[in-house]
Image 1: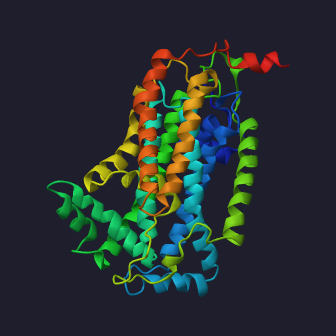
Image 2: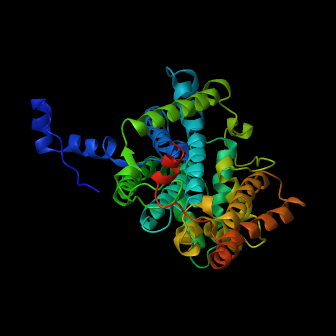
Image 3: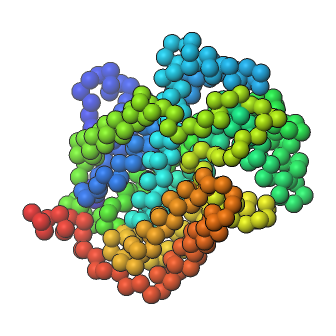
Length: 407
């Protein structure tokens, strides 16, 4: 593949600036002429859509922070004031509240796509690890943000989830009191959660930049899961993929706008529109929908420590995916047995999400345990067996071969 040659800018001001800080050349290299596999489809658009959702969350969060009051006596009322008295405050809050759901939807699909097409395999291990770290920070950030409105579900959700750390032998109780900043969820807790909720998105944005940097170093994957063999296998990023990305972003924004303007409380819990009350426990404490699969796994065992360890393991197992799936074929499109296992795994994750919203009683507890076994069996039983016994279909010689053969 040919090396990149920086262009000569005709505009003297652009040329002057670029010689001192080559930002324009950098954008030209990575956003215009960057060689991308010619067979990339719309499944590869979820990354840029996730970046758009992150920008929405950052901007709306900054403006909401200008009016929010991190005080247990005033937090709930300050949110109501944003909704009723601040110009377009309702729009800012609905964008931010539903933007969290949009962000998780896009990132979850993005990661499932990576699991199916082997985006975690060499040489993309570091790229994958950064992505999993972003997911982990998203979960922490979303949990802290859910507490800030100081509704009754927020308060009790914070109390229940943070109390889980007491199961850690030796340091559990001191750790929980450090998180709380007191002996219970109170004013210091709200102060800390507000500070962390403002800090973590900045870290996520920085990691997203590093994620993109790592992607452009190892080059984008593709549905065939094979390496680029020559210039015929690639096309410039602009205009081919910029147009595709813009079209996809338009569809995503239409989908997002429906919830913001017509069903803004679709993902919300009614109990969170009641001020926090330490003396009034909600009949059924339910986290946000994007936590539900992990919440279900948490309840799979009777032991609090065991539940916490299982929940953490359900996320941390993603870090070792490059060492669990050792098939030389990246794409699931050429792995017939893997395809069956993968879609059963996806269905199991959705089933866990549904179970997480149910009461902690039979038959749901038994179903949670079965679904949890299936979840971990996929990683530690199914994938190793597929590595040993599966016979993949033949791969094409190049990315361009399936494209040109249909011409």
